[in-house]
Length: 308
Image 1 (cartoon, rainbow, N blue to C red):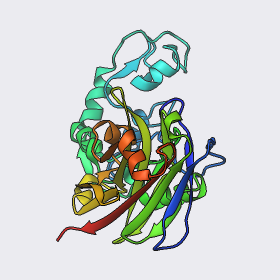
Image 2: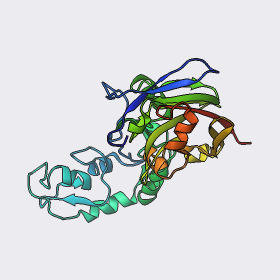
Image 3: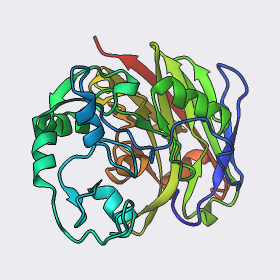
């Protein structure tokens, strides 16, 4: 959420009625989360046929993960991985000598010659790769964990989709709705005062998948705007199987958007900044709200469908 923004809570009425979103400033904290954090280290393991002694030789004494080039050594020959070299402030954890920039080329050759399992093996990837192929694979491994899609606060939780759905419900108190059509009314008194705000995320369950509906206020250049967009809880390849539409209107006039939901692999900010969604100028949003055009009462209708 941009600085100065607020959260907005939802009041759900019924399946055919509108869900009303009202602004309410709050803070969200993770308390005692059992979910895996994005900062968790996922160390690759040697293939089952690899020698245990080689495994021990390549094990970093600090993080206990396998070491990959560049591997550093102190003057006494003790080794450490490149990440932990920084963490120990260049002082050998075994003998306290300074590391300097001495590379252990022999051990690097050993690491490069081994077949290694994907670092996301714990999430279900059973593939095994030579060292350099492994690094390339891991950048796009379909089993790599997803980041929490909640946009209202910085959240470092990561995991598979079922874990994130539970996390959103239990920790962020996000409402989950069944169905592929929806009508929501976003409400804010004194809309002119809203500079940056994020309304509470809504998650829809349909076609055996989950979709995140975002709505927020921000400035596009100098112009205050509102934006609604949908993200798919899964990979981009799966997201392309679906389409969605959003619509706002009043008094015989309407503004519509149709697109493909973006994968949550793309951050909320990346999607927003790419303007890939329904964008409504503030004056137009207040026109659609009716009344004296001071209070935001914007109805957003939408539909999700699966392409044939």
